[in-house]
Length: 239
Image (cartoon, rainbow, N blue to C red; front, side, top):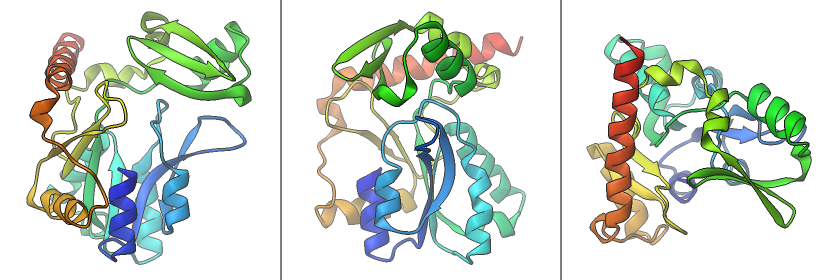
């Protein structure tokens, strides 16, 4: 995602990017921003496991009279923007040129997971955490040590509304992206002509390195598994 945004900004394909940036004063707590420089885009890099209401930053794009901003967000946010487009809310959708959707099983509540569980129960100082990752378990890297939290424990702090969402892979985005267990790679799905235009331009300029997704069968299988699981969860929650 970062590489595509940097390429697009450098080549004037976009005039900003709505992304989530973690606060220094509150480790790993994301807030929505309108990034207009390469430095701001780089500062927003990395997976965010806590919810950031990125749609709120559209107002910044309106205030700054942007007309070709990229938007990076979760499946529910991408869907909301598509609904705004269908509803003809031009004021809010005109600034947006590219929608990049993030694969998402659920987002966590910061106060519950970070403050109450990781800090309060496990005694881990958030300022000492180097990285948070999910691979079968939630892995919290502190200095040189990694603490594993069972997903069942972490999921207690998932946002309740996530249980009703059936979209894992951001099906309404121009480009959908996700880790899917890949080391050093990001799985990308090109869903629209606009997405193909941006992705192909970045690929042609060698701003990104690509390989055929069919070479990563495990990632494909995981994509199908997680998508199916989320649909089943949403169906059960809505009964």
